[in-house]
Length: 370
Image (cartoon, rainbow, N blue to C red; front, side, top):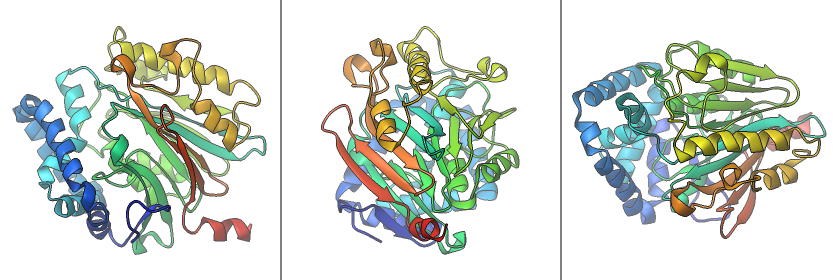
């Protein structure tokens, strides 16, 4: 495992519990900030978490997670032990958005934009602006995960200290990239949490087809959208407990912000259309749609990075958020190349931008063999 704060990613090697413990070990200087984040989030939602409906749902979710994705439970337990955070606290933190949706609490400020498309060489690139309330900026890190159980596959991710694999976006050594956006929904149930589902896709799947099959094979808890791309195809999946919808393409592009787009999913969106971040979601989707319809918008990775760092015609449509007046803050822009396994990340693009490039371990050998 590598030390935090170096020029490369934080490399975590072993089974899920071991990787969770290593994650905490290399970030001990930030452990107090990680614990403070969890404690503050749970304190803000104290009444919600004490509700019997929430406690019974979390108990059912834990039982389902233990059966459907035991590796996720093991990694969270490793993080819990390593950071000194009670397991039930971390597990509840990861489910806060679902609990808020179930209780009818207005959505948080998190407002990401993600898309996938084909560049001028017809190679697939996947991009995401990670937009949050800003508190995660100092906790954001790049991780590389290597597990002997993955048959040689490795995973490169953008995530946060204290949170499991694929917490925001990822690419694996087979050239499969995945990114998510938050979408509140009225269609939640007991199933695989989106975050845990992303970890399974990144660690178990080699193609878009594999990912869609995995999603279809098990119930998910509902909420959010996934953008997935391999070396030849792209897909978007809008997640619901009773039904999910997807679209797969071998050309063009696909994008999502923070509302459902498929006609069958729109009525399940929990977002109040009158709220500012609801208007922002629609405006950002319009901005990225117009941009991607231009032939040169995503002609290569550099153009894709510029696109995600751009502004729209009006403030609501800015893809790169500035955090002002209660708005979300874009804490990173990331673009993945599925052919080369490379990640280009611009951290804090609305402020002191710092661009770095990483390659998922093992990809170079596969590219050279082509």
